[in-house]
Every structure is written in C-alpha cells, then in structure tokens.
Length: 322
Image (cartoon, rainbow, N blue to C red; front, side):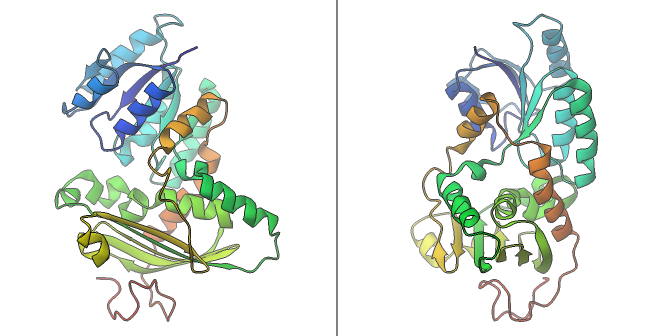
C-alpha cells in the first residue's frame, strides 16, 4: 500500500533525490513547500502535488490532511531544508502524526537530539535520517571484512579527500554561515564521518589542522583506524587531472594505500534509504548521534600543528589555520 508524503525544502539541491526516491518506491507526494518557487523539477515527478511558498499555508495544509482521515494523513515528511531548520521540521512531522525522513545532519548541535527523542516517544513516530553510505555495497563488504578480523587486528591507515567545487554564492548563502550550516565539516563531511565511525569505531582523539571557511583538515584516531581527512569546497583544491577533464569534484578514500571504489552506486542510494525505511529498517537518532557529536567537537576545536601527520594536501605547508 502506497504512503503519503509531504516535502519541505523542495527547491533545494538535494530535493530531487528525495522526489525520485518517493516516486521509485511507489508512493505519493501530496504537498511540498519552499520559499523559493524555482521548483519545475516537480513536473518530472509529482506535477499534481500542492505547492506552497509560505510556511504558514503549508502548516495549514498539513493540519487539514491530519484531520481528513487515514487516506489523507501524511505518513512521512521528507526534510530537505537548510541544516539549522532540520530539528524544527522534524518536530513538525511528529506533531502532525508523521514520521520524519531528514537529510543529514539531523541537527547541528548534539544536545538538540534529546528533545527529538522525547517527542518520538510522545507521538509514537520515528525520526529517520539519510546515512546513505551505510548502504553502499562496497562499504558493507568492507565492514564485514573488518568485523571478521576481530578486535586485535592492526589499526588501519585511512586517507579521506573530498573536494567539491562551490561558487561564490556558497559563502553568501546559509551554507557559508557556520551557525546555520555547521561549517564545511558538517555540511559536506557529515556522511563521511558517519561511515568512518560506523566502520572503525568511536573516536579516541581528534586533531584539527586547518579551519577555513572553504576547507578543513585534521586527523582522527578511531578505535581501529587513524584517519587523515581533507574537505574543501574551493575549486583551487581540485587535482589538475580532474580539472583537465572538466570535472568539478574529487573523492578519494584509501585504506592502507588501497583505494575504496565508490565510483558506482554513490548517487542512487537515496532510493535505497527509502526502501530500507519503508521495509521497517532505517537509521534514526541513535545511529546519527556519534558523527554529530564528533563533528561538533571538530568544529569547536583549536587548530594545532600537525607534527608530521598532516593530510598529504597540507604536507609541506607552513600555515594551517588561514
């Protein structure tokens, strides 16, 4: 039986993946909201869905659906709004009797998870989040391999590099405001930190080596791995070979010098997340919390000298905090 969805933030960058997932899982989108009206993408998926540019009218619509009986009830609210609004929109979902499917990060500040837990219990609904890399076949294979190795296996050396070009608009939008987005480590890095903790266990120590509006870098010591990481939205950090081919993103993850192949299946995982939730699975507050706490710790840390363990991008540089 198909489910009824509503979606907030439908004009956003990530919303098309959610529209596609709702469609491909055979469900209905009854209403969507965004203060921006550049939402022609809806025609490709749900042209008959109601659309609102004012939150108050969207709220009125959701309440009307709630009171209209089982066939009109919104079963899930998909949340693609700016990061700082995620927990507010999760609360909205629970209050109208819907489950929330919220883009990462679920919250920016970890203490906001406590209220969501209380509301889940009060309304008997779930808050799910999109941790799609946990469903990537290559990472599932790697996790099984790690678990088979037992607790005494040697600590892995992991190197994570992610550069995704963003134009000048980025820093003028909410994404460039640390208080609204959580900064680079939260906005583009949260799903990487999540799967690293999922694979290699909790963080023992964290060192921040670079903290600039466009890039961050540091070292994590996890239970079973040391991770040197570099994240950037500056096109100047793209490797020359990527630029020569006209590319605008570079993603590399190596374990003991061996590349993890995430080149396939990376962009289609939102539908798998929806399938998992609808089948009774899904990732919730408990799964999201460790990475949210870790990234909060990272972004509030003081930059320290790398002392020879910097990410390769930083090696040889003398200025680390910009």
